[in-house]
Image (cartoon, rainbow, N blue to C red):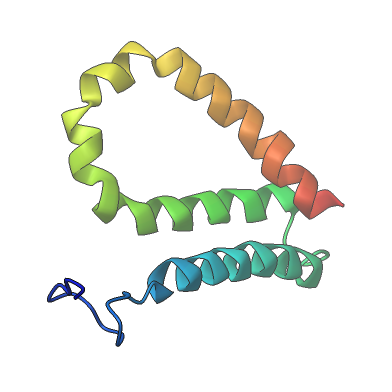
Length: 102
């Protein structure tokens, strides 16, 4: 005789793991849409302008989710502000800027 828990959603005791796969597909669609949008707006918006607005929209989207963690770890963030600044200055033009100029 098998022990089935109350969280079982399939006959036989297995649980459905659909959410992780949906999140992977969503992440791939977001990344792919970034490249498609870069091609579409290539001659209209300057590359660094697209990088700026992508960072602003992303930060505004993530801020409500991460605000408590940022506040709780503010001493570490302020302690390593030079590293965060260096990573940001290198990532924006080298990581994202090259996507939009290609």
